[in-house]
Length: 189
Image (cartoon, rainbow, N blue to C red; front, side, top):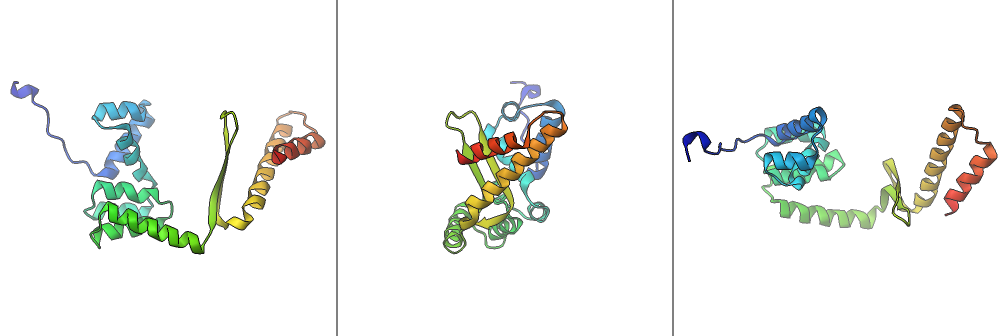
């Protein structure tokens, strides 16, 4: 092999910069994650996980930029939706020198303890029997499980009402009676 054909050594790119670069490829050039994976000789899973870093809170991003953390730990943190938990994971790795396995075990145990004392939900999803579609309701805040049925029903009623209002505004004639009949039929299923 001639010197001009030697493979170039891989250059270290900080994970947040890598995520931003991948996002630019998607947005600017329309690349799919699969195409990017081939381009950079990584798995699609890797590309997806790196893009997941964009879900880090601003405080967590600062922690990632100022700490020496393994990429595995950085990928683990955005799996948590709450910024405090993201920081907690990053702190466990940087301050307590815990491995990803230690962090997962500790997080899992804490999750079990929390669920025993604080039964809450944030999202409800229903899938049609034929698999053609799914309906999902995601609440901004967590709510107690005992209120789940009423909260989801109220949210769906509100959504159906707004959709019906929009149809009427767009000129679709749908009487109030028809809208209520459709709404009641959908909820009773």
